Length: 214
Picture 1 (cartoon, rainbow, N blue to C red):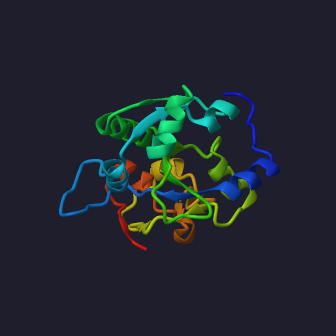
Picture 2 (cartoon, rainbow, N blue to C red; picture 1 turned 90 degrees about the horizontal axis):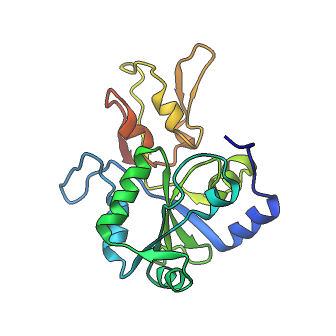
């Protein structure tokens, strides 16, 4: 592991002027279909995209704070076309894109749909698989408390305190500090900090966590 590097305040503020990230929830059902790893929002986005390309994650390539895969940035439509023409990405199929999204989820990365900050109603330009140690959006949120940089999904996780075996897996998977251990090593769930990514849902060995409408 390299020495932990941080984005400068100037770069984070410039990033905030250009981008807003919207959390993509996982493990929810849609249209009465349930999948073992249900990435429905990502699937919806990819099915609507006319062009899909794959490039390197700028954040992990720049900071190199972790060993997570870098060839994970999914570019959509016009942005895909621009990156392919410049040699920074290659076109991929929906099946290939979904395989990347599923793999990065298993590795514990948060999926964020990237929008231009002045138009979050537009179709997303990218689907990023983010780690909190490198991602500009997550670093801005966690280290500098930049409100509005990352938008919560429309879902929030639950916590079954009585049945929980206190294994701590969900604590390790949470990038937002919503699940922490107290002085007695018991899990404390701070629901107001939950962004509804679903990483805790798919990793709970007892299947005690679910996403519900916020």
